[in-house]
Amino acid sequence: MTDDVQAEQQADVTATPASRVAVTPAAAQMIRELEEQHGPVMFHQSGGCCDGSAPMCFPQGEFLVGDADVHVGDLDVTAPGAAGEPGEPGERVEVWMSREQFAYWSHTHLTIDLVPGRGAGFSLEAPTGNRFLLRSRLLTDEEVALLAPTSS
Image 1 (tube, rainbow, N blue to C red):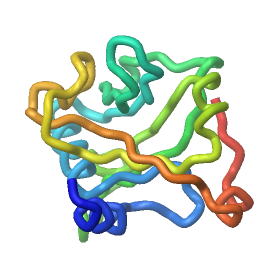
Image 2: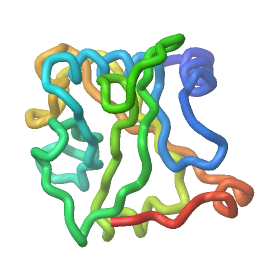
Image 3: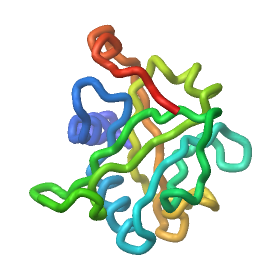
Image 4: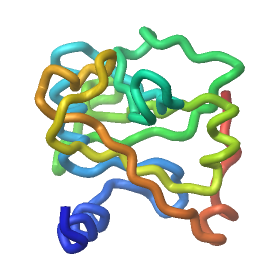
């Protein structure tokens, strides 16, 4: 991917100024399609091993989170121009990661993107010919000051 294309995608991300997570329009569209098929979904940032370090998409509640996990934030995947009722597909999608891994990533802003290629075996997008990809950048001092504490 060229720097120009990547910069354009990064500039067209849904995020609030003080969030830890965002989603590109392509990834948001895929999430809405997955929600139509599977109901509400959530993400857990894989820590490595079999699935590398890919953001894994699961039906909400299928991947159990607990005290060892951190709720990093919520993605706004509402379709552009859509005004739905709370709880409908295309609203907020939770993003989680292990507390141990978050200690290393706590200084970064994470953007979930969608790229062509085979997804991780357990993630819902795997059969689509696309995969979710995590892009990161350092949080600014201003963002860190505005961020709410994370919860588990």
